[in-house]
Length: 413
Picture 1 (cartoon, one colour):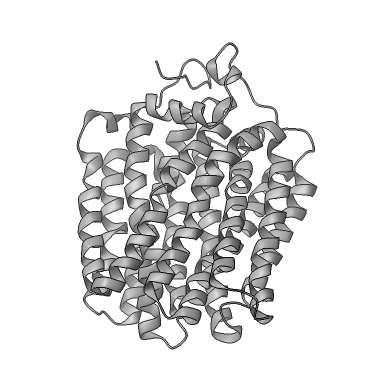
Picture 2: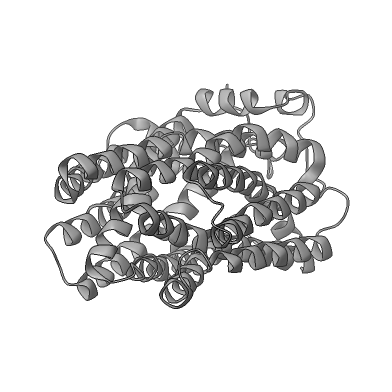
């Protein structure tokens, strides 16, 4: 139990730090440049590392194990983040160097998160936890961490400025390093490997990519997430920061916008494990996407008061909170335990590959046409995407885990 709680706590601290960065960096760039296009470029550099880290990080986690990978990744990420406010205070932070630090810090984040995530099912099994309980708890912790981090960032930006609040991220990373060092055994967590399977002898990102492509349900899920992530990235790195700076002096409202969404998502993720067995997951996914995606864009588009927008974001978060547990449990059930690091790394990279494009297009679109047309396009696109799981037989697999014998998930044929 100590190992499980330690890894979950380290994941929580890491996510708090990430949430602070998520709020602080766009506001920091907006404050320094006043440019929507520059903010979009910074957003691209903050999301591109997720792709790079997914490609390069998973083989490293496989080779060095979760403990070493997490310790090294969190330490290097903290160093990159804390360099931003220090160099800014010394007036030695040109825009290009800022982008480089954002890029490097993000590259280290992804393998660190992968290292923590892939050991959770085995640690949970040792404690008698079901897979739905593990994924639901993990999602709830990540959502609550985003809530805490964004709220802290909102207050911090208003009090000490967007740059200085990044010092807190370094503190969070240091705490995660200590927790992993104490709680996770120095040896790898043993997993039940399937003998004589391709997962046992194939290494690297390309195995994970091939596995995803050969599994119809996972392929459909990743393609759906690919597009929704692009829209979410534009919203998070460009649209909401610009809207928030238009209605609040320092843009600190942006942190509370993320906080309200995260609060709703926390409740949704916490409730999901209690009702998971009774949910028709395919239909639920359609409804959740429809409620989580378009409403916030519509609220900002029609000029709703900030309190109304915050309420809409909270309700959208309620729907969104159950989406990640559904997706995670589907992945865990369809991926052999000894291939999870590689497949999860490929999943992260592929799902995030459109995020830099989303940030860049969002920033360029706002700069060229203004905020309203971009909000309208995002709302319409999300509404269409929400209907995708309602079409096609492949989505029936959400209700039917593929199992070959007791507790072992099979490779696709």
